[in-house]
Length: 168
Image (cartoon, rainbow, N blue to C red; front, side, top):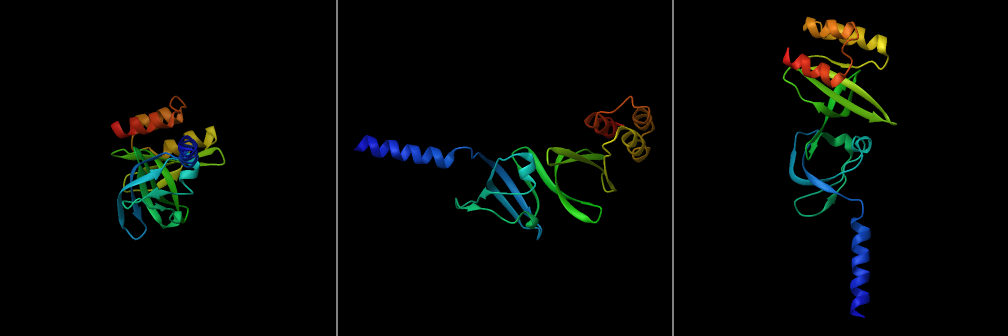
């Protein structure tokens, strides 16, 4: 009887914890309240922009409306809202630079990228090759060597572009 109860308890525990991984994080709400020392559920990047589940300091599971969240960190990942085309959208910060930031938003298995000059305008990175080199080259024209390489299509890796721009 004891073994049956123990086996049943372990079975229930394994089902309830299956697939749920939580990592340390911090949440900042739209009202600028900071919720620190929480455990945030690790889910796919796309779902991370739509849902948030965390365990608060008292051990209670919380599921706030994602629209009430301004930004949050989950381990080494940072999710934040940016203002683009008249709306605030939640994105993952890929690179935080001293001059240029790179953000990504995964939606329906397609990742849309945004670049932001620090304290300046944010642009959506065009997906087509011809627009990519022209628009990004013009946007980063204050770093002539980087812009020239982009326009000549010698430089097309977005992370490398951001790295070179930040070091220019």
